[in-house]
Length: 269
Image (tube, rainbow, N blue to C red; front, side, top):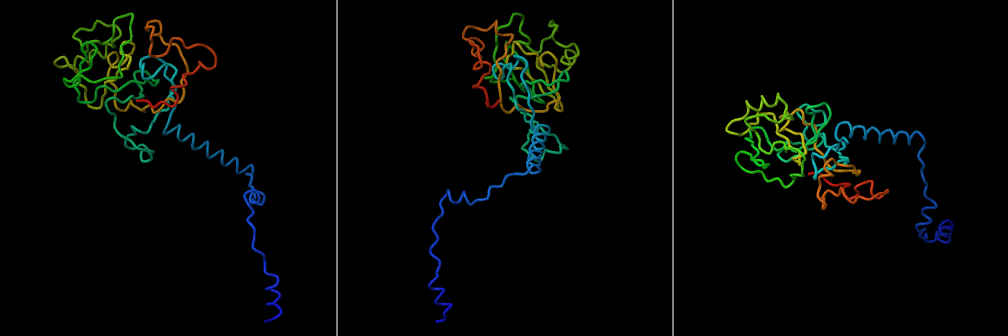
């Protein structure tokens, strides 16, 4: 055995001891991002947010009581702009998409430039009529658990629809003339590419009964979720019963009551 071998055996390294978590953290190199790295990360986040809000999602606030009790005045919605994407839309391949279906709550441009929100009731090819406030599609009464009939001071719009004589000044004359052409056997025949929309709060909604059909290209999005809800007065508050299911009465004061906390992150359907 050589001297080098003897020295190697004599000076064999002892078995290393585990350093433990604290020892590991003491020896671990903590990297702090530089200013350019932080700016780059922030820029990427902003770009992604702008892309999602510009092409996929969009915020929307409910301004009126026409969709109570599904949507309340002061509800802030996040809308899916991709679900109804048409052919040629650059981002259509990124997210699931489908055509408009009966019962969908949709956001659309009609009849004014601003966005409106209603529920799809009649589809292209349907024969539709309303009798005593109940909707009939192709001769069958539609099950509508979402529809409400809050009290109204005036005559309800469209309790019976279509009618043979236009006595309601709220009905657009141009729509009335078109309605006469589309009506057969007391039913409205919805043409291709058009939809009949109603508000859930039937006695307090200006909708297809008043201003007509909505074309497919006017429908731009579908509400996904209520991401915040501010307590806002509704014009139906004075007409509501003491046991108001909307919670308009007894709201109280103070910071705890300025929002409807239980509605936050509620899925819209």
